[in-house]
Image (cartoon, rainbow over all chains, first blue to last red; front, side, top):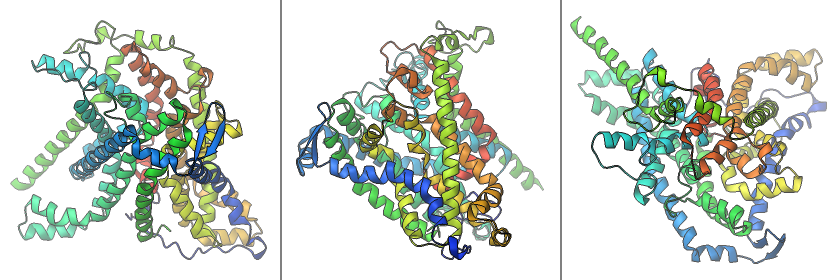
Amino acid sequence: MSSPRNEPLQLQKVQSQPTLYSPRPEHFRWSPYLFLVPTVGMMTLFSFFPMLYGLWMSLQDIDAIRGTSRFIGLNNYLRLFRDPQFGESLFNTAWYTLTVVPLILIGSIAVGIFLRESRPARLLARVGFYIPFVLSPVVVATAWKWLLNEDLGVTDGFLKWAGLPTVPWLSADFSARVSVVVTTVWNLVGFYMLMVLAGLSQINAELYEAARIEGADAWKRFWHITLPMLKPTILLIVILATVHATQAFETILLLTAGGPGSATRLIVQNMYQSAFNRLQPGYAVAQAVVILPIILFVAWLQMRLFKQEGMI
Amino acid sequence: MKGEKLNSFRKFAYDIVSVVVCIFFLTPVLWSVFSAFQSSGNLFTFPPSFDPRSFTLENFRAVFATGNVPQYALNSFIVATLSSLLTVMASAMAGFALAKYKFLGRQFILMLIISVLLVPLQVLMVPVFLVLKTLGWVNNLIGIIIPPAATATGTFMMRQYMVGIPDDVLEAARIDGATDWKIFWRVILPLSAPALGAVCILSFTWRWNDYLWPLIVINSQQNFTLQLSLANLIGTNTVEWGTLLAYATLVMIPVLIVFLCFQRYFLKGSLAGSVKA
């Protein structure tokens, strides 16, 4: 994703290797490190150390009430295999991810193409589509809960008004799952639309001109030019949306609290409850460690992408 | 000629469709705000009445009876402001080092920062909570001000911007005898104003909207942020929808104002780091 040179805030291709400013010899050793102290310090304390500490914790049986802990090796992990609740949350995360990611992909490409031209009305619509992404999870959950609220909400109000049967949006397994997925896609699609727009701006307009002269219709142009040219963007969207989906927590917690039953309880919520409701932090962390390979794989992919873009 | 006219008409039609679709897309928000102004009697009628005479502020008054809302607002404001300033300062410094210096371990530090981008709080919340507990920052606003302040997105945005500042400028300052810190403070920071602004605005909205950190760290009412107290209302069994929606409207207003005023920064800036911090 590169951009015109006068738009410095977008991710641009910069050669990262030669940093041109070599400071005076007497400062050579220290100043860059000193400049990095606040950021690296905070990250160490609140990210890297917790990562390692988490790994250690997952090998312990921690009694949060008495404050005692006992080394139990891999028992927490073995317990995961026998825990139907964890299995269910893993399954829930899987279907959630597998529906949210394609829907976000299709949605963001559709909206992006629709709002591609920079006419005032489309620019306005872009801002509108982005709005859900700047709202807090609490506000998003409140708005959707109101919308889907059974008997009283507008969706059911509309269905009744149209003489159709109402749907128990948040209180039956299947419809609650649908509601959660719809809410997530609605929340995030504007953000991914921006990526599609950035990708589209990279496509040479002459390609379309040439295709038009050859007599290719809109569908053919989309299929043979737009889609192939968007490939890097699509890859990035799939990666980031997967990250977003595997970590989904707050909005769902507020919207359905994981219910009905445990139909919409995903891994992170399961972990949160193990730690803070059932007070088994060691076991909770073991669950987090299980998601780690997924995240690391995605991290690796992203790292490669960043390298391609000249970020590292 | 005729084709051109038809074409511009089609474009205009498209414009209208795009705005209409966008408004439909925003139904959940618009409907919530609309409902917040309805009296409890009108709230559940469908089709709704759009008669402005039936609008009321009673729900907004009720919000302030749910708890010490001004205190929560103050907390949210303090947290978002201080945390953003910290983010701006830390990312500017780190961005400068990564953009303009050649030093041992630079690559390694970049990798570390990217890994922070990808291993989010959701996964780390339990050990992070214990770290905060050890520091005595649990149930303290400082626990939601400092820990989220180091963001990879902010650091990358600053770095990307500063790479574009010509080295001649730094060279000139150095010949004048400026120390590295002075170069950063007097030359780099003023030149990076747009990026500083962007990071500050983005960070303010992240922290204002934050629910996860406060959820983990804060447990007494006096330290609640707006998000936390609103979330608590959602959880109650007897939901007063009017109050809840009025509260949500109040909570989203500052962010919406910031977003609409600075939407350029959002629409461009958010791509730099790719992930919300």
